[in-house]
Image (cartoon, rainbow, N blue to C red; front, side, top):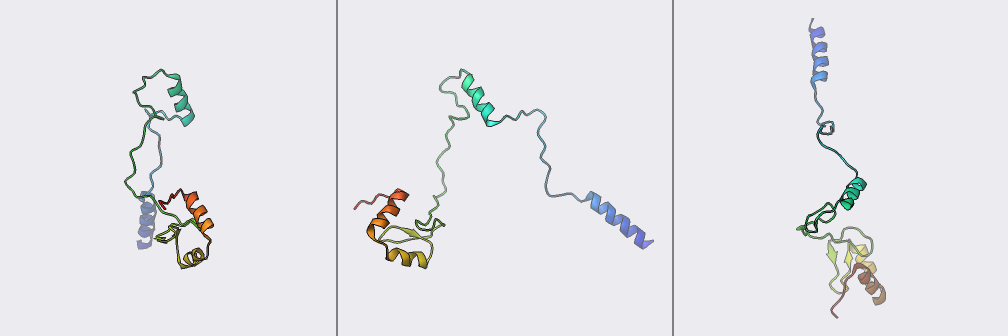
Length: 118
């Protein structure tokens, strides 16, 4: 009798166990439109200039600091050379930067958009 009740309890617990994921269900009263349809609707309507639309809304500036990437490898770079102003990831990149000519360093800086005051 004990074996029968434990197998029934195991089956019922499997049925009652709920997943942590909830299935995605569209709301009944909500209409979902693709981006192309939204842009066509806004273009065809004669809206006042001061009324915001989906494409005229501007986001506020981010409060999160910008990520800094290595000029050589493109990986997130925690270090910067004070003399050349190039960013680097590890000691190997730093050693390779020490042997670079100044024109290549200036090209790396121009690609990043860095303008020196010198």
